[in-house]
Structures are given as C-alpha cells and as structure tokens.
Amino acid sequence: MANVSKSGYYKWKKHSNELDKDYDDYALIKEIFDKGKGKYGWRTIQMKLKVKMNHKKIIRIKNKYNLITKIRKVNPYKAIMKKTQEHRTFKNTLDRNFKQNTPNKVFCTDITYLPFNHRLAYFSAVKDIASGEIVGYNLSQHLQIDIVLKTLENLKNNLSLSSLKDTMIHSDQGFHYTNPEYISYVKELNMVQSMSRKGNCIDNAPIESFFGHLKDDVDCKKCKTFSELSLIVEEYVRYYNQERPQWKLKKMTPVKYRNHLLLSQK
Image (cartoon, rainbow, N blue to C red; front, side, top):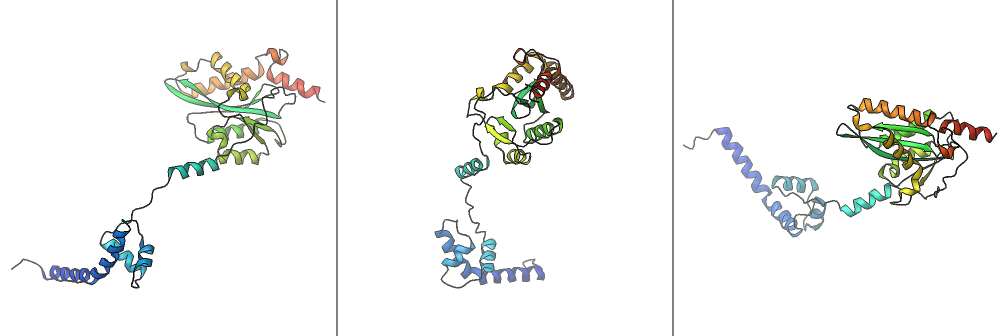
C-alpha cells in the first residue's frame, strides 16, 4: 500500500532502532556540549559525564548528531611573537667604520629593485668595503629567500679564498637577513653578521652608494625582457669593478685598488 520495498523497510527499521538506542547517550552528551557552548571535545565531555562512556562512542555519537566542536583560532599576537623569535637581529658591529684597509674582510649587502618593461626585478649585491668591489650578486624576478642565499653562493664561488672565517657581512634588518635560513648559511660560511640600526640607511651607505650609481648609469627601463636586463646588469658590474676609476680609491678601479691593498700588506 505504501509502495515501499521490503529491503527499504528493514533498512529504515534498523536505522530507527539505532537512533532510539543512542538517543539517551546523545542527550547526556548534548547537555554537556551545550553547557560548553560547543567548545568541548570528546576528552572534556568524557571527564564531565556522570556515567562511564568509551571515547570512541562519544566521537561516534558526536559525528552522528553533528555536534561539531568549535576550534579555537590562532592568536595573531602569539603568531607575531613566534615569528619575531625566529627572525633574529644582530648588533651593529660595523658601526659606520667604512675606512677599511684589508680586502675580503668586511662586506655590506642589500637588495634594490630595478624597473623594466612595466615590471620589477630585484638585485641583491655584496660589496667589499675596503676595495669598493662588488664581490657577489644575484638578479631575480621575485623576493623569496633564495635571492640572498644565491647571492652568498655567488660570493663564495667568486672569491679565490680558502675561507671566509670571521669575515663580517653587514646588512639592514630586512626580512631576508633576519631569516633563519640566511643566518644558518652565514654561520655555515663562518662569517659574522652585523646589522644597521632599524630605519637607518646611512649605516649601510657603501652599498646604497653603489645602487645609486647603478640606477644613474644604466637605463633598465629600456630592457624588454629579464634576460636582456640580466646581461646589462652583468656588464655594468664588470665595468664598475674593472674599468670605472674612483677618486677615493686613488683614482683606481675597485679591482686594481684591491690588488694595491693586498700588495701593500705583504
């Protein structure tokens, strides 16, 4: 008469019996769940129940009756504090002592942007304060952490030094230089980190001076592709190091002045 199949009827009957069987336990759980304003999980419910109930049963009934526990949100201030602890800063050991006479002992580094074809590229460089030479650099289309890691790799490969032990590398307090990965790599190279005071670009004046000359001398905006920009930047670094004499370097190029300093110390 009801047009119900035999299998459908028994399935419904079995389901009805299960509902009836769990209902009393559900009522107990629901009472505690509501008192906790939907924040109690199975552990708290089990502790507050006046009868013994297996945790698997509590979980099953919660799922069956859709008693979903509200998950506590992450405290944004705690997240910021954790991030601050991970990203360390270092003392300003350089302290604007830009008069250095020994090459490959004190470096400064930073990142600048280069506009081209309505886009931006990012240029990371390391400068030897004593000689004025650009000893490592990396040009990238993004600002991820590997821009500075590859710069250090380039520095390590370019210098004909057996060791960088106790060599100082000075930077600002930017995200890249306080990053644990960068700090770890600097330690791996046995270098010493120094950092400018917060918001004080004069503490890192030598590298800022180089970026200024680069942007004055090179028309990056005429480059249509990143490859074209890479070539023009590479050529400028070579020119700056090997062909461009500087008054403060006794009218020598950075490479010649570096060799002059090394010879005078023998």
